[in-house]
Length: 199
Image 1 (cartoon, rainbow, N blue to C red):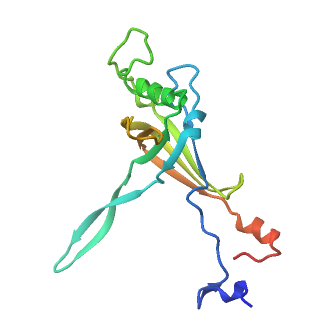
Image 2 (tube, one colour):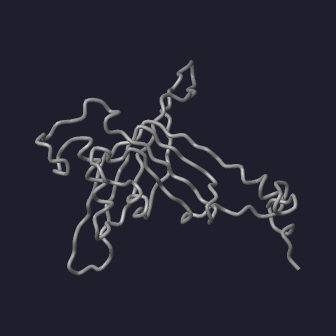
Image 3 (cartoon, rainbow, N blue to C red):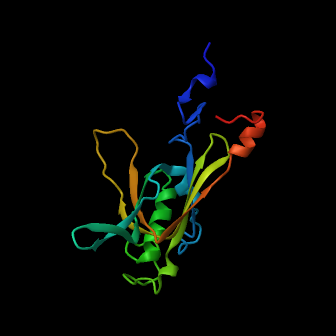
């Protein structure tokens, strides 16, 4: 009869660690679309269907010497995040996106206060923050990514097609200044629940 001790990697450990699942997550926002009163960022969270997690890349700096080259890390760059929304029939999520675009630069006519094409005076006038949380299948948070200094770099309201019946989506590209990661330590609570065994 197979037991957990039969699984694992020789010399590394026994047992199985449950993987994080791609469909257990949520994304939330702070200060997105704040120029228009009445918009609620929860509508974007509820309509999100896919999101990419942060990607970090370092420039490489070559150090040339007599007959060899070594490399050290240079400046870092956070790659933009892609977020896909389903466009709901009440346009609640769309209103948040358009309000954010108007906050960055008045272009699409959401805020009709007589000013057109003007940009914000500073980045803090329109930048927002967002949080991606990996969940355990219930309400427990396994991992958190916090992105700061966010703005919408690109928005694709997608196409319409008489021959198609799938939902309309909005594709957002979010550029941000910095990301922070917080890992929740579930091993202690799991170990207690399982009598000290985790794996």
